[in-house]
Image 1: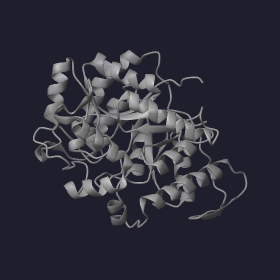
Image 2: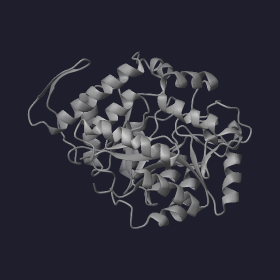
Image 3: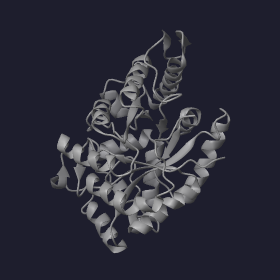
Length: 371
């Protein structure tokens, strides 16, 4: 099995940025100027895609992603398909239209939502299990619509569709799907549909075991050699290791555990997330295992998980150490890295200038391609 070249993505902080996640006074509020600075660094820095987040505090991801697709030359927005939020025929038309208009620069992020409380607040009453069921159907419908030359006839549990649509996507057979989720249901859907399954953080040895599991699931759908794997990680990189650890500690100075900077509701939000998100439970398990040092590996640090839901494991070190740690995940089977760091423009600039040169000759010239 050929090993795909490595791709790197970065995160657009549409819920705002920060220089210290535990201090509201150091929050950098959302603005086009803030986003422009991050996007300019990422578009010219060697990254191939940019993740558009969708929690309750974020600006709307499809609009933001479409706006920046029109203003950039290189990066592809990674835009959420939120199951149950949009009719799949409309989703298929929206994504195909953007794929055509952007010249094939689009990735789709399959999201069931980490918190039932937030989706209910949005007027979507489905449980997470139902949202995953709908996700499976929605992707099946979109793939069928994109491939069809005559009206499809889909009679499913949640959708009954008889339609033909234009345009078709520019990317063949369709834009790549990403999915980051840790439940059994999420892993099955990813095995069936994902181009890239994203893990939120773990030790490299643990990721290698998880890859074996997902690849075995994918084999049931004839996709064992098609599915790719990636890591969703934070980056704290400085010229020296000592400076990197000082920067990491400064980022959470004064933190109270589970007062989440990227969610409304503080510890109440954390409990809702804990109930419904296996991936977050795994990240928070690593936080507990890391003890007072907050380390699970010489250069993997769980501190951000104290104050942020989702991907809170960070790679901390000098450029060589950061690159070497990412290479441990490459050895485990990962070929895509969806990254972030605080503040995001500065962190992306450091990563592009000081870490990406270690991967020259191994990086893809495009986004991951669906088979």
